Length: 122
Image (spheres, rainbow, N blue to C red):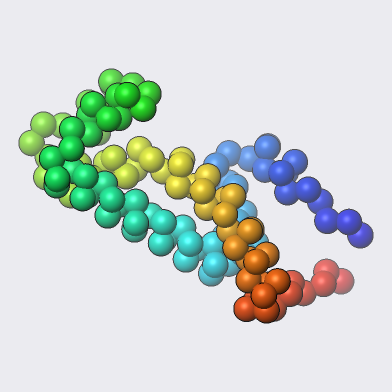
């Protein structure tokens, strides 16, 4: 039996549903990769905010609406809260990276023998 093309199935699902599907299909690898990329993202944004980068201007140039920026970045917020809010704005980017990368990572690890091949479906 030929495997169904996952890209056809994913077009019907939103990003959150696609992420859940990746977690279900690839298990700990998917979760670990997503948590790892999330921690790196939060660290980068914390470093940017604490270094004094004007994140409002950067986000505005990237196309975020002014209303979403004002609601997330109230004046007087702490560095971590501001970095976390920006981190949350970029959730769709992180989810997309996870959805695209995890199948390639698992396929490569199986090819070099680091992971077992998938069990055949009965």
